[in-house]
Image (cartoon, rainbow, N blue to C red; front, side):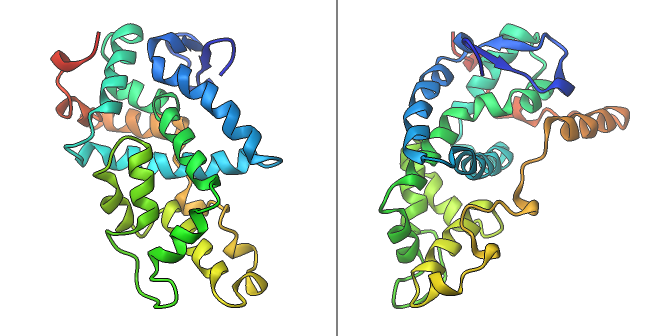
Length: 231
């Protein structure tokens, strides 16, 4: 992101190397919010954003199956209509990081808050240890902060994700002696390899393979009809 422009992945340079942030105003607003979150993060803002980005990318991958999700598909339509003639499959890949940026900033802000570790502890029942579930208070807060109150229960029961690993590490650190026993594998800010989002280059290779096999790769066309795209 630079001077009101979003820099595209070098492997995705098909419609120019940048696009104007003015196309999606929410991204512009999030850029200003990120400056404040970055200051609060201190010396490790990139580590914070890496985790938040992994969390939101997971939601992005799951979103085609969520009927309630309409915000990001509309951003996608706006982007595709302006720059790519409606090529949603291509833009869903190369535009992902820009489209999810507002949610990534919101998640990063929550993860920085002092009460977050307490919410993670409560998610596991505190002193009365139990499994996390749909009532996970941290996931509920995240859903509310990204403007999707319905998301909390879905995130709370998604156990194979960066967010689940993060919450688990925070909770283990709260147990008696947990902080002393923690090793690098228990670092709550470590994004495990299996939780890292696929790169644009990797997804474009898959898309090319799908095209050769007559796959569409454009499932989001069914989520929001072209007629509902915002002006």
